[in-house]
Image (cartoon, rainbow, N blue to C red; front, side, top):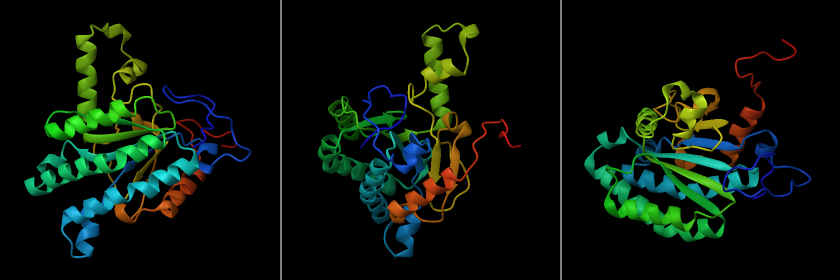
Length: 257
């Protein structure tokens, strides 16, 4: 993947810009975040168990990440499991955790070969010990990769993230007079990464669901009725086209207004 942004992220190497920059990079999408919703509904439509939908969702990662690569996107954050998802039936949760172990075992070598740096954002507690070890191994194994940063939001909650940041600032003895938005950002799970430019939510739900609630303050949202297992390269390009057509003012006004 060729990175075309003017500023280089920590841990990513700048490459020479091609003659024609990929669409997403050319229009300023450095960080794409996705709420991968609809696996269960996808399975129900096919009279399959919910876990079959989760498996189809993990199988879909290949084509979406491949398109992100083509588009020159530098950071991808995937909402895999929220702090609220523990309320789901125990059988579904334990099956999903086992599936994530399998996905790491199956995909790690290829992701590493393609230069993807894997990160985990969220709380590590409550995650099964074996999965914790596999996550840590994946992080360490890909730590020096420079092509794309892949954040897996697992046992993640936006409010929990802010609570954790406040606790860390207290432990660090941060002077209250020094606390501002930049300071808080340093203590978030996504420290040193740009805020998401575009947040995609599949399966037609119109809510934030406690996802990147600090970082997404000025993100553009794209909501589609397509369930996550069916969200392919073409659907991602539609999301990018929607983003490109918008006027991002960040609270200001355009010169023509």
